[in-house]
Amino acid sequence: MSDIVLVYPKTGFDIKKTTVDLPLGILSTAAVLVDSYKVKVIDQRINPDWEKELKKELKKEPKFVALSSMGGTQIGYALELSKMVKENSNAKVVWGGLQATLLPEPTIQHPMVDVVAIGEAEGIMQDLANTLSNGSNLSNVKGIFFKEQEKVVRNLPAEVLDVNTFPEIPYDLVDVEEYIGSRSMTVPQMKRTLPFVTSRGCPYQCTFCCVPGYAKRRWRGMSVDLTHQRVMEMVERFKLDSVVFHDENFLSNPKRAEELAKKFKRNFLWSIQARMDNINRTDMETLEKGGLVHVQPGIESGSERILKLMKKDETKEQMLEANRKLAKTSIIPAYNFMMGFPTETLQDTYETVDFALQLIKENPNAMIAGFYVYMPTGGTEAFELALQHGFQPPTTLEGWVTFNRQHQDTPWIQDKVATLNNVMLTSKLVDGKRFSNMFQKFHIPEAVYQMVGAYYRRKWRQHNFRDTLDIKALRSISRMLFTY
Image (cartoon, rainbow, N blue to C red):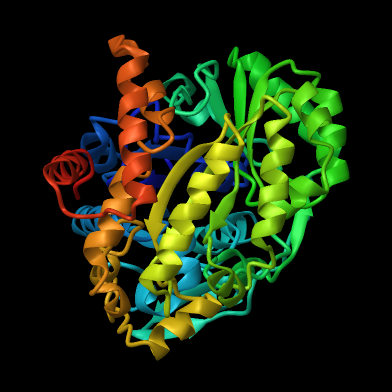
């Protein structure tokens, strides 16, 4: 019998061993509970028997069932799971994750949701579990919204904790081998990989990003020694050859990153997310010697006007400088781009396309991770800008299901949808590398990939984004792979 059930819903973009990572959010939640309670973790993405297991647990009337949702299509699956809990038990349904944190009001208003946990679960869940166990009043639990006689009660926020006090991840609650996957689309030699988070938050103010809203522009890093200890224990225990660090901004403290690299001593390969201006402030050769092989920066736009509007606090020249710096190493940068920002014109989008082509031309190792359409996210500064330009946010949780990085629903892009869709679909083919890595097991001649890349680079240079037969075929393939 389990006291608490933690469920991670499908996202709608789940490809085992590629996009399905270890559910660190619910495992971090479990970490603060396992010493006092029996905890069951169910991952709907990889468990074919999830329904049978969940109903079995519900018969034992757990204290509560907690679900995590980052928004978009995952909301739909989380609501279906919540309904199942309600129909098969009297357990409280607790929602956490980005959706609950950024939009607590529409989340708690839903009849399938009893409690919303806002922010980091480590500072909330132990108190919540204790309160539900002894029947105390939830009004004393910091960091939650809850319902009391149909009325929504908003409690005080939870304290921000020192990340060095967080307990270790309870890997025994899941079959870790199911999550050890490859990052072959970008780095073929990364074959046995797991994620790890060494810090929380980010000190920057990008208006489209949800992190400034809930982290208050604070960055908190685990100590170098503790990070090294826990990462090496994970690498050795699961015989990994690589680690993907899921920190929002791994290089917020460049000196710390350099110290970690010296301790890692290339005992495994690793990948990070980082800003380009921070790359300029970091000794990337030291990181490369320590095992760094892949970095994924958010370039977002090639329009200086849009970069300023986003409060990106980076210039194109800084980004070019960082790209040239990376070109002197063997580190592979995979660049992310954003289109369809409020007030963005087609000329702004074309400038971004041209900038992406310049980056991959000046750095033979560079790849394009993808072009995505801006999605208004509650709790961000740009959300207010979106409202000013005609965005009408959904009034229900169900309404937010369609809002993901592939959405095409915002009013200011309607005259540009065909172009944005074309750029989005072809962005992973332009560099001629990711496509090759993705299908390497099929032994297709390298010349084919180079021809495909050259074909789309030429179309991008010409700003030729007509809805041709190849685009229609790519759209059909995309719909087959990623459908809710």
